[in-house]
Length: 224
Image (cartoon, rainbow, N blue to C red; front, top):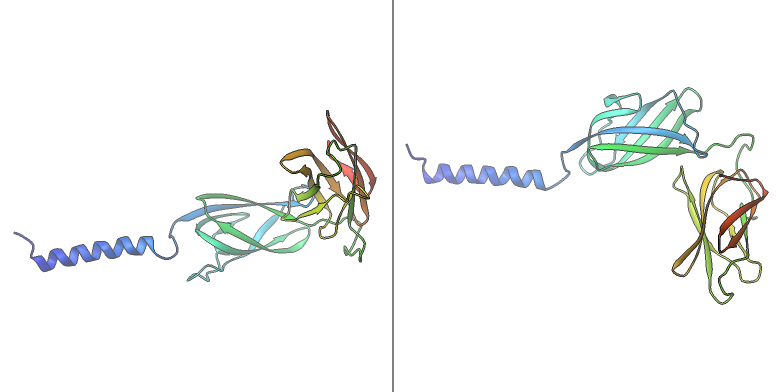
């Protein structure tokens, strides 16, 4: 028995509709999401669970915390924006953290500012970090920059090295472990890990053909 032309057309339209729905809009693929929590100095924070995992994606405002056991969730739809709230035995409520889920197995590192003994972190108008550069092989006519990047946070900041004071200053970070990069034009002159411990941090970066070294002057610890 042959199908009529109208039936064939209906089947074709249904097929096209299914393909279109799978291509358009939010993808329906889902992921296993594992959250890993660290202090800003890289110390793991244990005994935590997900208090909230709310979707802010287009067409989806679902709360997915029930899909988490501890810090691992399953069946989390792909999406660019989720708001995560965590509760820990030590530290209470932490967050919000903004998370993107774009892989079937997503491992997300979350950094939490830790401030032992410092209380509220306010330094006024003075720089929170001053870096002095000594012995750079770059001519004085060539500009140098220093960039600091938080290893367990989203913090980063750039400043040029002053030709007069041979220093760079930074104002917008919180204590933690940072990667410090000294660059000039198209070359990397130095990269060092440092722990920035508090306000008024100062260090000297000495550069030579064989490498570079960090000398802590105040509220800084070099990471070997």
